[in-house]
Image (tube, rainbow, N blue to C red):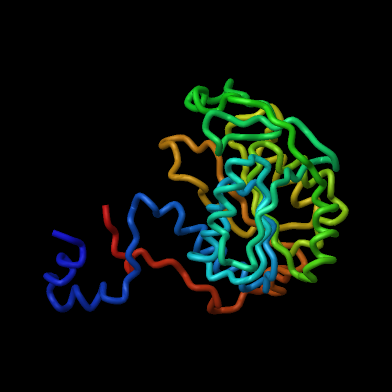
Length: 279
């Protein structure tokens, strides 16, 4: 029996309780937190451009369009030619989504890029499997290629001059390189209104930075935590990685800085009683 058939058989009182509920597959619940957070935050910050660094095959950009109601510019940066090609296919017909075959890094020039056996693990950094044996068979180098690199500052200046966006948001998922990107362009970080970065709880790369150090670095650049959101279904009972979503500190609500929150929050509260769970 389908879920809809089960709902139709409910007594009227129960049916009235669930008719306006959100339907969530438990297997995909982890992604829902990210969708909700980004939908609210990108609108709150009035974002008009997203830098999607470490775009892989375009999954994040596609999520922004389909799940986060975002309609502005997206620049997806992916140095792996195979993955960049798939991302371009996804972006076809979307004149505000551009896929660029480029690694955002510490310097302008070129670098050796490690294509792993599972492409989502590919990185400028070498793999490190000492902390977690689970990924050793996929987080290993299949081939090394030469890719073009640019500092974030260089890319921001070039694209802003061409497209004229004013309120960019930065998303990074570079497999161990996020903090290095920020450190190399620290002087322009506050030109972004918000950011999202993958945090390493377990270190899977030689350049991985402890999640506490990463947050401290981002705070030093003028950002405050907005949320932690899962970036995969997890490896119960351990946490290996998670994304942090941050807002530029001066854009936080004034009542937050003053410690004077309004009596009733303007932000919707997640109510599990308004969710119809499916297995």
